[in-house]
Image 1 (spheres, rainbow, N blue to C red):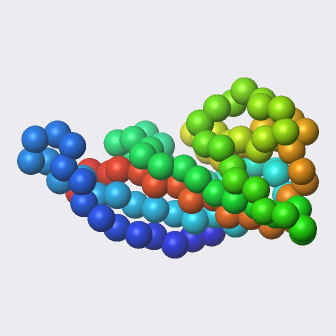
Image 2: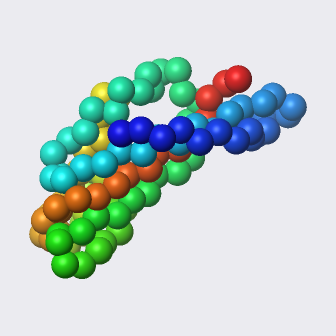
Length: 104
């Protein structure tokens, strides 16, 4: 964990919202406690990442709790980043980046 990046968005009229980004590292596909207060976020706008099995590098797919054969996917609960890895290569290290909007 953690690196923050800030930028401003104006989605609703002239109301300023800041974008915050946090980076999480992992070595296995065990769920990661993200420590975010989900009820205080406006919305997630990006989620992405990659990992290696020690030989090759692979992308992570954000946004579903449904297994995709041979792919590593992840989704966000109120407390964790959860992986679903049906048949995907094992992880030796990786990174997930979450970006969300927050009221200023």
